[in-house]
Image (tube, rainbow, N blue to C red):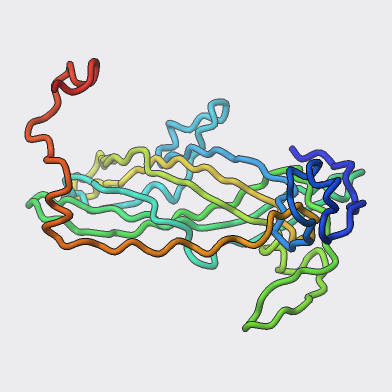
Length: 270
């Protein structure tokens, strides 16, 4: 977790660094004031979610989620190519940002989001129904995070730079709290629930297991004084692509046979 820094307003004024002080700044030529997003605090939340309630285990961090249990036709032969394709646009919302008692700059952040999962269904006749959609809706709470309130949020809108004054409960919080997600479908199985009275009433379910990493950041736009070595040099010219045959003739031939076990131990033979 973030610890409050003893650094406050810089004692150095932006401008050219005198020759006798440049070595102290790594031979930079000047001090400049830049406006950048600064991450004040962040944390990592690991989630392992299952669609089978019997596999949930709170002590081991395995949580049941009803969205991961999807009813399907019992003629389905299998589920393949299940993958998380990303966040549903606009689904990330801050639910609440509660202050920790005794420290108004530390917050408990509660938020909601929705992940889009695609999968392919293999039918009994061998046909494949591609890109079936599953939406996983989640709400999480993390913290405490060091997330001080800012009087002004600076952002770009239609080419104009504007200052927006906000209060703690404004939806502008989505610009302060950032969410990064890496998610993967770990497993998917088909389960049959038999009806003892009538086999025609049997139900089948696709049961997913999903692993998710959430990185939550408190990010504010600030102005910092930093040493600079001058403007960036112009980029080098782009290399031109050669003729197809020239490129082909300059490449090494591919390996015609699978590597042997010895190749992994001693390297390829000459």
